[in-house]
Length: 142
Image 1: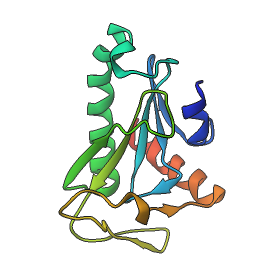
Image 2 (image 1 turned 90 degrees about the horizontal axis):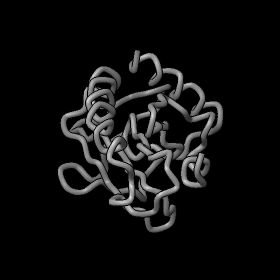
Image 3 (image 1 turned 180 degrees about the horizontal axis):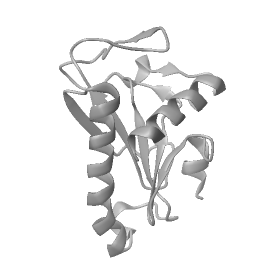
Image 4 (image 1 turned 90 degrees about the vertical axis):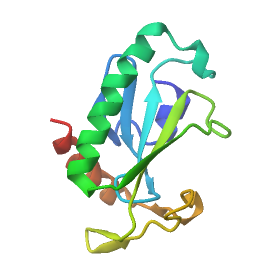
């Protein structure tokens, strides 16, 4: 796996692996169910991905949206391709909602609703919490 994938906690944060992509639980939850969709390629430019990765991305996005609808009942979803600090191709997947969601006894509001997500308000998960949320998200991808 590339350094960006490793930075986001792989293999412990791995929710689902595809041929060209991995879906990871984001260690800092901007909103409940925040994920990272990362290309397994070493590419640092979106256009440098192989054509098969683009074809598979549609399947992966559909799986993400089904899983997150079941997990956190999002109202909208944002895919942010930032790649400023972590150079390999990846998206931050941020479920959006007007009312806070509860998980593991914690309220997780969407601090930016209805505007752009507030990435700085993300709740950093402990390694134990990351393992639990990863497992719960995996169940929604089956």
